[in-house]
Length: 153
Image 1 (spheres, rainbow, N blue to C red):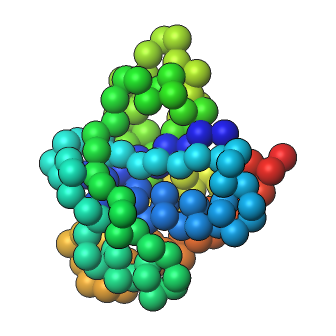
Image 2 (image 1 turned 90 degrees about the horizontal axis):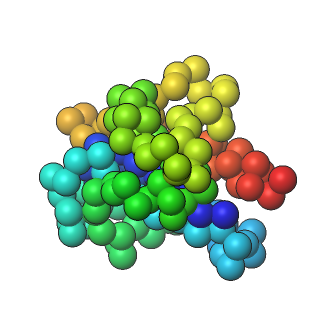
């Protein structure tokens, strides 16, 4: 199973989701069967590491994002991945519009895997304080646990 996480610039939400989910996959011993990546709908930060605030918040919970680098989602991704997970409804609309007709990937909202979240969107913490990054991690950890259970099925 190949999973791609997508947000706007690929420096906050989607690399956090990739790092958290990858960590859980490795801990579950499924690293050989589940692969992950992340990308942005826009190319603002191509080649950049995740936002330092995302890295700090993730590291405080034991997740390492330091080796990740931003990239932009491509049409090829819809053929290479099984599941593309949008961080919010705007990303979902963007992905749905660019999805090739013969694509194999299923596009979903990430928080569809966390029905108790009370929202469909992982909020963008970029313009807020540290509590926003912690809230994003809370949502992502819960959704990642549910996604891992889904992947096992």
